[in-house]
Image (cartoon, rainbow over all chains, first blue to last red; front, side, top):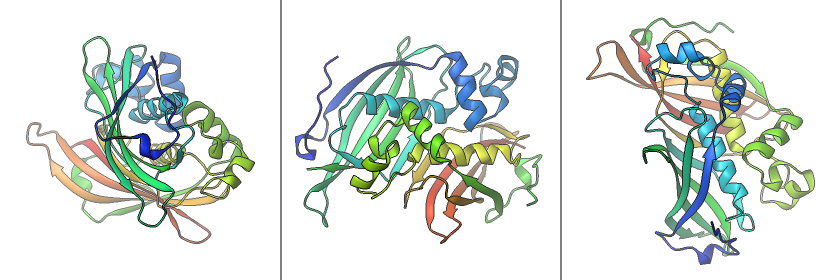
Length: 149
Length: 149
């Protein structure tokens, strides 16, 4: 894995793709996150999961989203240039089960210099997570970043 | 505060609004969430916050989103009918500071019976959080729920 550490918005190009490594949501963390932020039974209990429309216990989508975002921050890719963000669009096409391995990547989908600030660019990244076992897409998040130029 | 506990998708009507009470993100929890899921300095350190574009330490937007969603689950409104969800659109028009009081509400913005399953309806709720002190909107999340009929 060789993730660059960008020093300016201007190093980005639409279509660039960065592999961000793998991620696992351990069962204990799935339950812990759900207790705090999404206490629905199918995220905390095996039996309730089996009776749910998922047919098994699955992670809260907010947990998947937060863990993928956290991994992207940890990667350092935007560490020196990310000033913040103000919106995202998220889809969870399939559920995430505890302990399964996800492959993460980020793709540059839109770049736009700020009109009001010459030292700022606005970038949309598409963050995706796929199950390593079968390639199924489990998270697709379009996130807007304000980046230093 | 009198939050109903719905028993069917069919009890909903577009334009209904539910007040979900108040929420505070305590400073220690802001730092803890950021360490786990969004370890950017302006979410964890006062001095880094002052140097950031926010001018102060602010909560991770993912923390605000997760906490608001958790509160909505705790409210019990959809506890008996929510089967899951698969997408959301989120905007954070202004940052959330530790320890400030937020007012939460949810509004029904779209209702659609499922075409494939007679026992299912698809509802879009707009969840918003506003600062109690000045009414400024800090979170605006359009969330899709699959609900029992």
